[in-house]
Length: 216
Ligand code: HEC
Image (tube, rainbow, N blue to C red):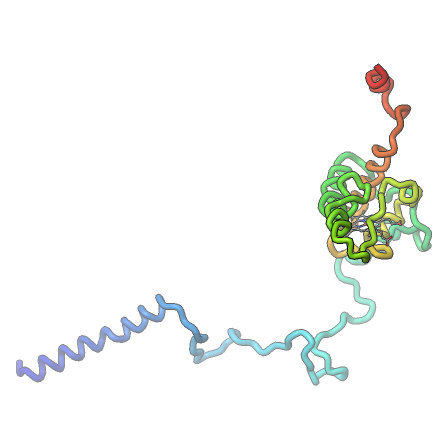
């Protein structure tokens, strides 16, 4: 074989390795730019971002409101006592729990209370949670102390009112409707009632043996 032919063959063999090298590098390196796309398919889709304009609609808003009267699945909320803490078709607050109050509900209420309410109202509900301790120490003069949940004022509140306080907030207390599900709100109300009972208990509320044990 003539020499030039050997050289050309060697060069060609070397060149066949180049694409393999390129593929290897492409698969094993980090890229700064998006890959080149010959066929886009659905990889890159045009879409409107939140608050963008869209001339297709008469009001030019890309974000659409639900059609009037639309109710999302499971969002009918037809039961006033359970969903709003109010007497059916009325604005009066319910005085009876619209859910069965049992040990499981109470345990759930205790757990949720300690997460959502105790930071301000304290573990025992007396209004001296960590947030209050800190805010009082800062003494900025803008802090409204959280209400003592075992005080007579809150004892006298109907359960529906306390439920409403969690749902919509009250005066300086924010609303917790987005954080706490409806059933959990009732669980918390039940636990608040338990705190009130335990914090305001008298000797006469104890069973006879416990009374005796204490008076010895
Ligand atoms: C960020 C602190 C904070 C958290 C958390 C908080 N509260 Fe309050 N809460 C307050 C403050 C402050 C007030 C007093 C508001 C006022 O008088 O302006 C209050 C008042 C109340 C009252 C008395 C309302 C009335 O009838 O006058 C109830 C009941 C109550 N909170 C329940 C709860 C429950 C239940 C939770 C947990 C789901 C909770 N709060 C979580 C700060 C908080």
